[in-house]
Image: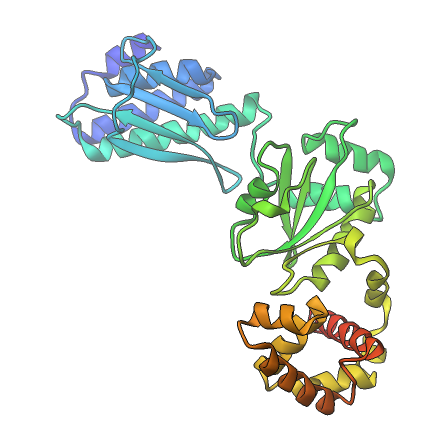
Length: 346
């Protein structure tokens, strides 16, 4: 390897320099080097300190051109490139070139090839600590059509130990799914895939308090991944702006509403009456706050209004719906109608 670097070091034109870099990394890959050897060889080729960092493990390699570990503290890198695997950033490679830089285009090519080589090494000697997973494997793990042997094998290939419980979360979010998975389960293992328009996150532990605004999630409760997935999808249907994350366990008897045929829901008088409020977001927000709190004053606090203003709104809403909202039965009817309407909108 060193002999090859020495032989190629005599090539000094731009084209020959690019060929030198390509041939160098092709040789390294054929020799199936590990990460330390890859870092040492790259530092020798670049003639400056070269670094490799893997996000999942926190492992950092910094090597000087002489093949030894570089002294700390490290300076700011002169150029960096992400390491990607399965469209997910799993690490970074960089050069710590002193003030007199080499050809920038050759540095870019070197880092690009180093990042590709690092991804290949991680995949070969893995398991790679990525969040995004093969959708086919995830679907096999959560499908009700899978037998237990196939499900166990899929979970094992995804990196889950047989003695650990696996929680299933259904997600809708503008954020990348790998970031959502990392927030839900920062300690790992966690795997995610997009199935249709819903993200699936499999994790051993779930911390929904870490999710940022804008993420809606339903969390299954069953030990079996297929049942947990069904529960997670149901819980996601109940998620809304006021309650973006819903645990299936917290739904209780409300989960039964998800089993009602849509035509029967649309024909219900209370649900149909809510449609008359569709053009008035303020009235819907007032009803939602009152149903969520069961109190005029707490609803007023949520809406940043005086409680008398909320009372006047509720009186008007009650007349529109034909429901006595201040009566216990009327409050229950409104709560159920709002929940069912959310299911229809899903």
